[in-house]
Amino acid sequence: MAHDTTIQTAGHDEHHHESPVVFGFWVYLMTDCIIFGTLFATFAVLRNQFNGGPNGHQLFEIGGLALETALLLISSITYGFGMIAAHKNEINKVIVWLGITFLLGLGFVGLEVKEFIGLIHEGAGPDRSAFLSAFFTLVSTHGLHVSFGLLWILTLMVQLAGTKTIPERMMSKLTCLSLFWHFLDIVWICVFTYVYLASMI
Amino acid sequence: MSEHNTTSSGESHGSVSSYIIGFVLAVILTVLSFAIVVTHSLSPSATILTLSLLAIIQVVVHLHYFLHMGGHSEHRWNNICFVFTIGFVSIVIIGTLFVMNNAAVQMMSR
Image (spheres, chains in turn purple, green):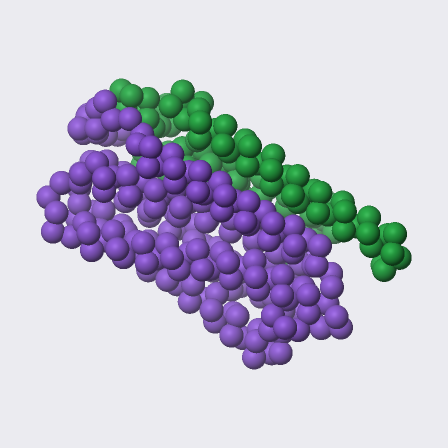
């Protein structure tokens, strides 16, 4: 099968133990998970406090949501292909996959900003009701995370450009970003399920 | 068919096929979630329940195929942290819902 060759070419990281940097980053992600947990709890409490304003059923559009979800999901697998290329030391491929991931992520953030502007324009800004305050806080926290992830992708693309091999340190950085990016996709699963879809029933 | 490449140290990172399997599963689960809501094929409470179930399965799929969580001995501390966090977040969410609901009932505000 195809992965037998992968194992051969991955031989360069023999005796490679997962660095403490990656574990440290994992612990950071767990604290991030707690931030999102508290924001989800807040949203769950305030989700029906409309103060006479619009509810999610009236505000959310399923088409835009599906597109955002698709972009983020595809960006997850493109980053994964980037990691596979990185393990094979194919730097140009890594840069291309990171670039595709960046564009997909940028599309996601763009759609989200467009949605927010539309909502605020309709008078459904974060100051309208407790429901919308909780909604904007939770979803924009996720969006900010994605934006910082985009900055991180760009930084690594610049650092990778022109190098011949991927040193251990760079591999750690790529692995941390991979955890971050896939983690954000997991948070988005909870967002589209409990914030958007559950409001549209 | 093995789903992960494993280096001699036991560290796992995905292969093309494992990413594609994970992606296909994730797409199926996402489409199901959207379809249930769009078609209104279930009662509201059954919809919420099914959505939750699909979301949990999809989170597990992502953890396994994209974040490569598993029972490797090297990942032991990662897993311990993860279990602790899940417990912590569950207490925060369930506790908040319980306390706020109880307060609302006591104050007859709903």
